Image (cartoon, rainbow, N blue to C red):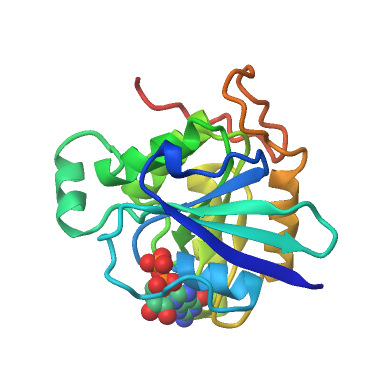
Length: 224
Ligand code: GDP
């Protein structure tokens, strides 16, 4: 199937984000989780920069993706979180998400996009990932979890890690590998589900329903 993908903008604040009302899916994950690689594997071109300086960018990179005859969508690649010093600070206090992540992510999530949380399959149940998931569940129109770098685990380890992930998050988790292409068709299906019915950018609407996927409602929302 033909995929047209292009970089739109690096957004620093709400005013930089697109205004044409296409469905948006936020990509959330720790620095180095493999977000850029996954994006490139999905669209089968080198769209996003991989292995840059992790944790440094505070911008959301917006990509416009049109696949086959489906309506175009925006994939909004949010800054990675939970890196180095900030992770240590997190452990002292609440399980909060990196404030740098919070800032632009809040602007993006105020539009009630759908969201994908990427977690490294080798590190299931990290505090920072769980905090991000709680936040996503409270803010996003629909959400799902993707386990990256599945090729790095042998079969037995993989089964164990996937079980652990699904037990921590209590929702189905999709295993993928940007390296081998495993899970890309399933990921497109997931993206289609999240994008349709389209979540329009109208913050005056009541809180959007979350029926796109098995409700992640067992997870408590963050303290406001
Ligand atoms: P980002 O910081 O989340 O955008 O992560 P990157 O996409 O830059 O990937 C971080 C590192 O993990 C790089 O060295 C990638 O080559 C590696 N990586 C990413 N995805 C995969 C994968 O599916 N399999 C393997 N084996 N390595 C991966």
